[in-house]
Length: 428
Ligand code: XLS
Ligand code: MG
Ligand code: MG
Image (cartoon, rainbow, N blue to C red):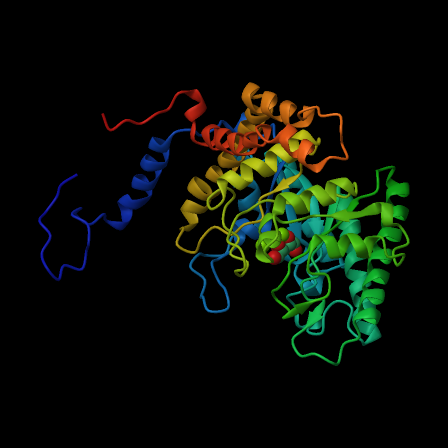
């Protein structure tokens, strides 16, 4: 690359000559290729990874941010997912159907177009979710005091169940981010939660009817928690709160309802996502998983999986692989607003999928690793003292073995960075 000397006060900090607009995509494409490590679309399709319509169509807007990318339609997104090798597609109802067309003939014409697009590209619909947070009708949430709002909410989730069956989905997600308030005192939390349960009951009952009619299994109804945003106070802020809600007795079909935890949503309240997932697994409620990354105690930054916490992600996947959870893994993140429309598919989605696959396979390596295996077995064997009423003896019996905790953590980092395969650095 041609270089020129830096001058003081130069507006460019690099020595590179400017890259004209019409050469930038080629540069990005060349560099992402040079990164290597990409899997083929066929390989990517072997994993139960879904791409949401809203993630690919996200234009970069936020409360303080104007959009940076153009609008794109579902035909485009589905085609691009197919090219990458993302085998499943998910959507909110209103990502693809205008609010005023829901439940009408126009909806079914759109559903027909979606079916054609999915079939034409060899992509399947895995999940549908009703948008119950964006439109002004949800200003007081999906379980507002006014009965007509709640009746409307029921029609929306029932319609979504119908659309889901029509598209061949197996899952439906509920993210009650609007179930809460900004100003306190007006809302009775107990009534609100009762009303919200009625909406879920209506969805499950419609599901049972349609599934019987179509000879299909019922959908898996998955609750997704987020501790804050968009309401200030949220009534079901964590996956654990949702487990309690599912078991509260308010649901008529609790066996149909489980969780869709989102990695970052657990991190946002300061949780260990792996522990939150473990609790969901223990309850038999890990139905679906939104994968992304971000920071503790910050807003919902929805960064691509593995870009912030790859070691934690490796550990999360070790847990999931060890306990038989194989998907769906839903790429619920937002390509950064600095990424162009070209970059959304060339870089953002392709690399998110590849990081996930790599971490998943590394998790397999960690599970099979002889050092971790022996260390874990030794920890579980313990030191073997017979006097279990003697604290000192029990402590002594395990004292040296407990160093293995740190040894295992070291080994996991080695696996993450490739040191277990002999990658070393030397200043010599
Ligand atoms: C928002 C949620 C949302 C759900 C689906 O923060 O992650 O995208 O996954 O409504
Ligand atoms: Mg999120
Ligand atoms: Mg989500």
